[in-house]
Image (cartoon, rainbow, N blue to C red):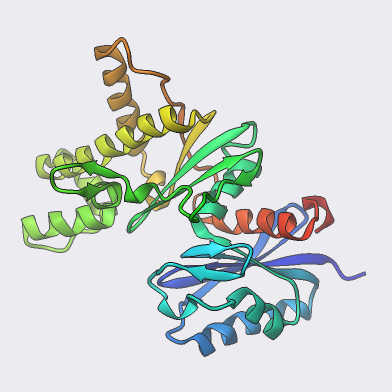
Length: 299
């Protein structure tokens, strides 16, 4: 008997990650560069689907994607680094071309769903996920369901203005990519976000100032989100979340504010994503099941 499986697709600005979910875990994880055209986008996803279909009884395809995904219309609204996926019913087009059921959800929402259902928020009623990358995305998940908001902006924490005078947003202030670019300009040589944190850890005072900005504003966002939505837990994801410097620094900032102020509201419980880069694909699995009335055990 052929094993049932669900194909997972995590679309990013530079690469598309593929895999399949069966027996309660992800398998055969691979990736390819994000295509430059819509035709090639369809082609690479279809090729992966055809390769899996030869080995499994595919239930469908679960897609995590950038952009404001309208679950009702199947349209990716807004904008992203992949301009050709927007403003037409792409979910229906994919389903027609792949000849199978397709689900589609925003990538940060998928990350939140994955952590809520399988990961660091598994035992929680409500979680807030903050995904830090080239910008900042996020999700609000209640009882393993995404709160999309009235304008599909639920969880778009990166747009929060953190410096009223300049209008600087959370994305501007905590992105390691943006910080690394600014630091590179200051020192006159290219430095990555990972290298920036390593320099700070090794005692580079200039690097420490940039990392302190990142962790200060991230801590401020966590504190304010806690006292806006009152989640059980705030989960930080994205590549930077794997850096051992990040969480202790965020917690130190929060603890210092708690100590200085007696009227400061609820202190957030902040943790790191369990699944990091796999959270999007796991969340896409949850979204597929919710979209088609299945349980995880039916895959």
